Image (tube, rainbow, N blue to C red; front, side, top):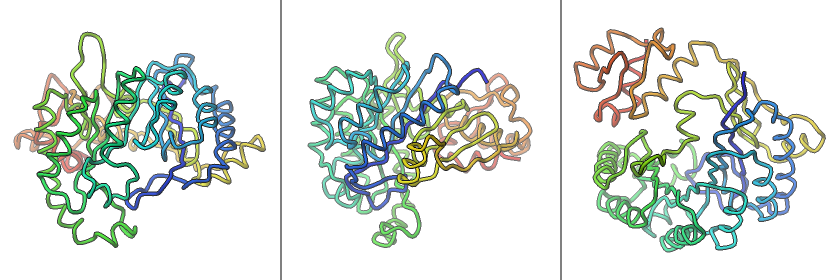
Length: 370
């Protein structure tokens, strides 16, 4: 292995755990942020040999990374390797001029702001702390600090949401002129308090998801954004400037990546590692100079091929089946049928989902698998 060029760092702390969230998070615990930051630095040092000398992307996610106590956040960010793209996730209510200045100072190039919605009623359903004005203030604060690569996250299919509500959310997002937008279907895991509270309405919203997805694509592409991945849109590049999320793009293309922190996942050749989700066990192990507790899964060629196909077909670029080594997992008869139905296009030995096929997404990919 010549070295991994993509690094993910997980900062799990949040002010509040939203009812629909299934990420590895820890609420509050400000007194533990410093020790966790030291553990992150410790794991990074233990794993640094796996990284290439020229790391391309670093993504700091959570949790809410910007909720992390400022000294602890600075400690983590200062320890990261230099990279062409350094993304940090932020919740709007945490973005202050002081925070924005710190992010600029340590070399952050891209900030992903979790807006989710601009409708106060829907934000209350999602149990979000920030309001619409907090989102706008966060973006303006980041602009004032000199950031010229900002992404906004939106969610649709929220209980009580209508097509008109979604239209208003998209208009509010576009008014802020972000370089990038991620628009996700709301996924509430069965058995959570969110599904207990909104079960019937979630079922109704599930029936409307395809229409919402079409609305998102039509609105954002109509505004000049490139629909480059199933749920992701970016302003079209001006000159040599690339505004796709380079970290995620590398993973969608099947690149290896190293994950640091509680619950973080790494894919390293034929090995997938998952750090255990316990903050306490993680900090204790690193403080003792040991690796954090983790599970290791060996990936056979078939599994890697299936994953590569599923991820690659999410993109708007042709996917070379034979050259990428996934030919053995493709059902050629199914491919012919999907081409005939206008869901898949053939281009010079490669395949690409049609716009309709991309909206159906996983169902088309599942049919392609032998």
